[in-house]
Each structure stands twice: as C-alpha cells, then as structure tokens.
Length: 147
Image (cartoon, rainbow, N blue to C red):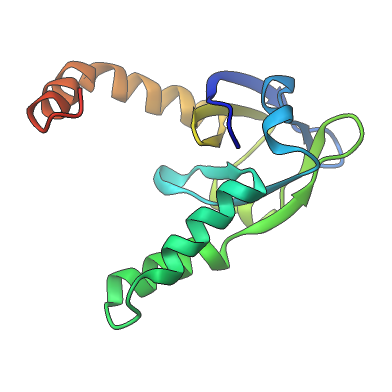
C-alpha cells in the first residue's frame, strides 16, 4: 500500500450486517481487506500487503517471551481476510463485531498504514479523551524526538 490513509468517515451497518468501506480507502485495499483485533477495543484493517508485513514482523519475534507470544496470538488469531463486494461493502465477522462492540453506526478512521474501525459512540468518547491529552502527548513525543 503506497497511499497514506487519513480522515474519519461514519457509515451504518445494514440489516445484513454489512458496512460500506469509505470510497476514500477502497483504492488502497483492492478487492480484499484483512481485519483484526486492534488496541483500545477497535478493529484494525490492512491491505493484504500491509498485513503481510505486520504478520512477518510478528513471526520474527521470539516465542520464548510470553508477551510476544500473547500479542502475536491476539493479532493473528483475531484476523480475517474479508472480500470487498462490487459496491464497496464488507461483512465484518461476528467475533470482531463483538470485540469492538460495533452497533449500528461505525466510524472508519485512517491512521497512516491502517484503517481503524470503531463503534461511533466509543470513537466519540475516545476522541474527547485524547483531545484533552493532545498537548501532553505532543510534549512527550517532542522529548523523544518524534516531533
């Protein structure tokens, strides 16, 4: 994937539990998307090539360390390859909908190399929390040379 994924878009799960992938992201994914459990109780969506890079990094970690084993299990066992239908919809697996507490309204947030999928209410609450901490986080990133 060469394009930078940015922006946030709200969509609605239909009666068959499908949701339209925002058209701004479709070109980056092609015909398939890999969705897995993410941090903060959201889902992460990757283009197949991007997911391959993540999986290879996880596979390169030592299985002797409990944390690396656990995180690899968290990411890899929670993943599913999902087809994007002809009109841009995806069917998010039930176990992932449960993990992310997805209800009717869903937010897709572009975060560089992945798209995060959030329940709209949870996203709103998370954003409010992060907005209050943005200056503190920026200072911390500045201290380590990231900004």
